[in-house]
Image (cartoon, one colour):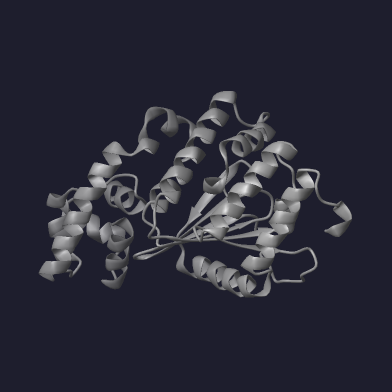
Length: 283
């Protein structure tokens, strides 16, 4: 909804201040609606759509219906509960909201399995690495959030999930051999049943991979958003030029790296090694 309203305002060549003045709202209200910090009521939406030039009855009815759903979801969303609001970043909570609506999710990681695909044991072990930066309570809530994200995302059958990881991600035994082997089995099963498409960037490949750390690129009905983590900080980027560059680079590298079959076979061999049934020299 917020992306659609921003797109409509930009098509009408209007500033946020012009919208605020016309609607007799504060500039802050317009900014917060477009940022997704607050939802918009149907009563506010109708005159706004008229001002933005959206007057087709079917389009207006659809957007008003979406606004009602959005307000209901915002009140009921698990990530809006006090514990999550206090211990997750604003950018992360917005990402979680977008994950529930995304048609495509492209994840690229150079260090760890992407968040919503992590098992609870793996996520817990990973969070322990931030004990100097995050409190125990913060780490606990973030692990809970990853479990909830995983459940919500994997229960959907209308989203395409692409996971591209550096080879090191499939070798780094976070949590120890047993926990890491369980994580690899989980990824292997998701890849084999078609829930997730997984490709590995091998050490041997001189590909033009981004060096801007791990990121998630979500395709939504009205645009794209990019979520990027840098250490314990994070950011959400909606700039079209930036998201387009990341998508173009991702899609290019996706065609250059190991395909799904080779990646699954690599994961299988890594599991055997962790179980003590494979030779490290065969890798």
